[in-house]
Image (cartoon, rainbow, N blue to C red; front, side, top):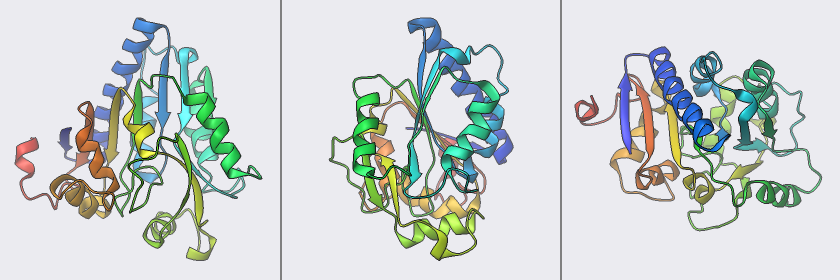
Length: 250
């Protein structure tokens, strides 16, 4: 894993977007298209805004896969990740294909199978991810399943995860936050050729410190990224503030 630390989240987002754009352009040139996994959340705002403004990308040659979505949340709800991705990516650059997770499917397990059929056998060129306040990767809360080969899972959201969603302003109360989600699995994320992990803000500092400096463990799901040789972690001064030796990354 490569770690880069920036003075603020605007600089972080621009740097990550520059790297993401270079990867996408390169893969389109090499194989004719680019397969991308897209994350959501408040931590991705600056990154995605900078990414969709990048020049020289033929977005019609991109195929996106949705990382995770709440079970049972209407698509027009302010917290819907489908709504988020349509507003921040689809409506702005019009990708050739965007495979959304349908959290309103009457049978979430069946939706997982549908998504598995879409992504299985594809080489994902780059995955955009973040790290949750509880160390989660996608909606794989601790203890995360590091072993399943299933590309998508129905998962239970722990209270820390649900409190984060409320704290970011997506919900008015904890009771409103769904208790289940459909999430891409850890192993599926790790199959990506490159992973760009965008993690600004002081509220992520404890999770960053634990995932970087403590042992790799399902109790710290994002710590598994240290085993992926082509992962870049983008931090700002705030999210890196609890690292014991941040100078080693500068």
